[in-house]
Structures are given as C-alpha cells and as structure tokens.
Amino acid sequence: MSNFLELCLRRQSCRSFSDQPVEHDKLAQCVEAGRLAPSGCNAQPWSFVVAETPAVVAEVAKCGQQMNMNPFLSKAQAFIIVLEEHAVLAPAIRKLLDSQYFAKGDLGAATVQICLEAAEQGLGTCIIGVYDREKICELLDIPVTKQFGALIAVGYPADGKIRPKIRKSTDEVLRFV
Ligand SMILES: Cc1cc2nc3c(=O)[nH]c(=O)nc-3n(C[C@H](O)[C@H](O)[C@H](O)COP(=O)(O)O)c2cc1C
Image 1 (cartoon, rainbow, N blue to C red):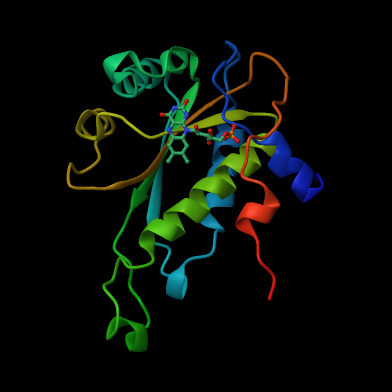
Image 2 (cartoon, rainbow, N blue to C red):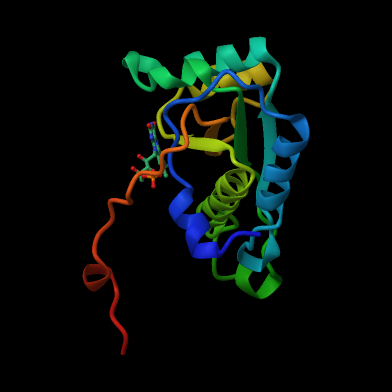
C-alpha cells in the first residue's frame, strides 16, 4: 500500500497507453474500489460496465473521439463506465431532497476511487468528458436513458513519467477558521 498523498500525486490522466492488455482481475479490482465509495444515505446510486473485449473497446474509443478529440483513446485497453442509478434516500431526507440530489457527487467519489486503485496497480486512466453516450449505450446494451457518471479509459502507461501537478495554490483554495 502506497502512502496516500504519494498515490494522489502519482495518479494522473494518462494520454499515452502501451499495447499491453489489462488483466481482467485488475479491472475488477478497480471497480471494487469504486463500489466501496461513500454515498449520500449510502444509496450507492451506481452500476458499472467494463468494456474489455478488444473489438468492443475499439468501438467505444471511437465514441470518445468526436471532432478529433482524444486521439490517444485508440490505444486504450479497456473502458470503465460508471452509470447513474436511482438513489433510495433515507425517509427523512427523501422529504427534503430529490432522489438524485447526492448522486453526481457519489458518482464522482466512485470514479476517483477507481482511478486511484488503478494508479495503485500501475495502470493509467483518463476520465473522458465528451463522448457519444447514445452510441456507447447501443454498443454495450445499456438502456439509452441511462446517465453516465464517468467514462474512464484504462491501460498501462507507455512511459512511467509522472508530471508535476498543475493546481491552484493551497493559499488560493484553503481557509482555516
Ligand atoms: C469530468 C472530467 C472530464 C475530463 N475529460 C477529459 C478528456 O476528454 N480528455 C482528456 O484528455 N482529459 C480529460 N480529463 C482529464 C483532466 O484534463 C485532468 O484530470 C486535469 O487536467 C488534471 O490533470 P491530472 O488528471 O493529470 O492530474 C477530464 C477530467 C475530468 C474530471
């Protein structure tokens, strides 16, 4: 087990994957980390679909390459899709908030746990923001009404270089009172 902050520095968006296939068990372990994420009322408003069959992976990659974006996806070895499911909130909360009120945050938590577990296993990931959701649904037999929390490309990084993090300074974002 790595030092956690060191793992946070090591997790980076990978935009250069090697040809090495990713083991099925490692993908399952990444999803397990996502499944263990916290969620509002412990509603766990998620499910996961993993594309690992090379022909399917190639088709999903094309869905994330609209307008020539994300050319590196051609070498992704797998995709993990985090799907938004209906959240059953605690009765007292249900009176106050819409069922999906916490869901976006919950899906983000699951997504980052997946990416951190992948980094822990030496895998690279890149969360993809723009993609043809409907086409992916068609390819993977997902109901077309289903919203995505994340599309995550996975593969072994082509090189081991860790980039320095570009982030707002601590002073800019933190205030103790
Ligand atoms: C919701 C979301 C969408 C993103 N979409 C893309 C994308 O389409 N292509 C890409 O190369 N990176 C994408 N990224 C990666 C971000 O650019 C990256 O997380 C950010 O620049 C910080 O860099 P780091 O992940 O290497 O620390 C996305 C990240 C998030 C969280």
